[in-house]
Amino acid sequence: MKYLIVANWKMNMTLPELRSYVNVIKSALIPSEREVAIAPPYTLLLPLFHMLEGSNIKIAAQNMYYEEKGAFTGEISPKHLLDAHVDYVIIGHSERRKIFGETDALIAKKLKTALSYNLIPIFCVGETLDERNTDKTFDIIVSQIENGLSLLTPQEIQNIVFAYEPVWAIGTGLNAYPAQAQEVHLFIKDLIQKKYFKTSIQNVKILYGGSVTPDNASDLMSMPDINGLLVGGASLNPEKFLGIINFKES
Image (cartoon, rainbow, N blue to C red):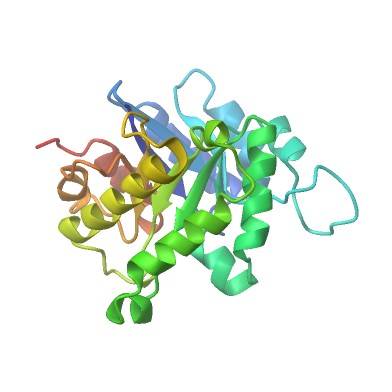
């Protein structure tokens, strides 16, 4: 299984900034066993695709709606993402849940639609600090996963990338200790394998997201069930992102 490192730029970057960023990252050597994807704002999806031609870096979107067209002002459809040569789409990010009120039911529809258009969803789950402090982490994870996957078949679930992002660690400078992250990743892996595949044979790719930096990437990736990273703030700096991509394996 290749490690997957995803940059989530959120509502950052302009076209001139994109050009200078790509000049740095496109010329860098990326290990063949690591897959890299960048999720820019919608306005930069197509320019980023053209600038990255000739590289192995994939394009990701930060969100999408579950309808392919219609009177949904301000939304973007899976067809629009395909026009921009998108490979991955982030769905259920904690900021979408918290700031925009996205429910598990809405997320389930988005996952179903993304898969029907051969887009690979990066399905985010995670608990708040209050939920962790009251020992509700695993209950929240089970609820988000079971509700989010409620419209999917086991075959469809095989095509999903999961991302554990503890809400208390996103943009705070805090991050789960590697052992804490590993505990939740193993829980997610066991839940999916036993509930949906009835076996431990199927591969389940689970990324960790939450204040990832070049300094902690190697320790996080030393955990056996962390299969990649979803990187926020540190991915806005190409040198820092390359430092994360090129983490040292223990």
